[in-house]
Amino acid sequence: MTVGRLFEIMGILYFAAAVLRMSPGGYYAATKQYRRIAAKFEKGYVGLASSISFWTSTRACILRWVRDLLVNRPTRHNLGLPVYALFTDASKEGWGAVLFSTDKAGFIEFGNRAVVSGKWLHRESVRHISELEAEAIVRALKRFAPTLNGCAFTLHVDNTSVLGALRKAQSPKYWLNKRIVQALDLVPDSVFEIRYVATKDNFADGPSRGRQLSVPHREHGWYGSL
Image 1 (cartoon, helix red, strand yellow):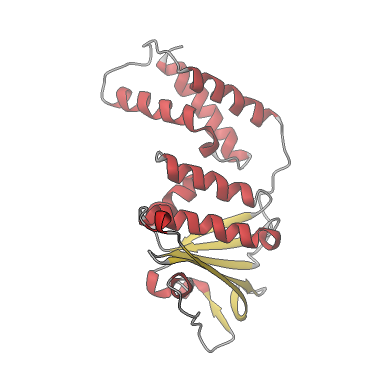
Image 2 (cartoon, helix red, strand yellow):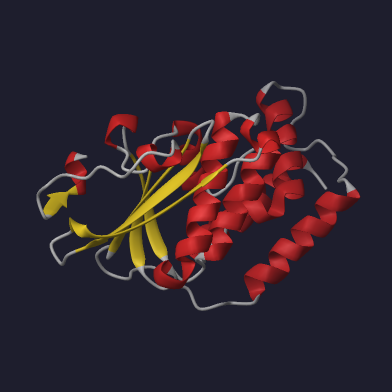
């Protein structure tokens, strides 16, 4: 195997995964070694004709990735306008999530909502805040999966590290990559867009800190202004 051949294979795998809406995060061993070899190539340590050897776990992971792609599962690319807007947040105290329905014009229906929250165990509260933010998303999707799966929705988060990893459907950090895969697996038949929301505008901020949800007094609102 040469570096150039590896780039060809990984390019095909990434492209096929994007078409089929499969998360590359589920193939961490392959993407990890690929990133390392790509970094060496960028620094000039290896060339396209350089020979490389794979870890046993990497070879098995690539074969599993190919087999999963060949299953040819039905893929949903467009479910219409979002019918729900999900806000999630985490603090050192706990996590919170607020699910709003949206009307046909894309406005949030503030009166039609569901709120969930919880406290961290001590061993959980000492984790990095980005890890807690990712865990909050997983827990929110677990609670709302029966409602969200098969629907179009928007996911609003205020942590840019988690937002970027979710948009790429993978992360070089193992703990974050693991939670992204968990999150995506919870709503496999959904199409959703990840959006950034400032902390001051995140409806889940209060519930994550043990406070009551505060929403505008108007019945509808455009979430682009949040």
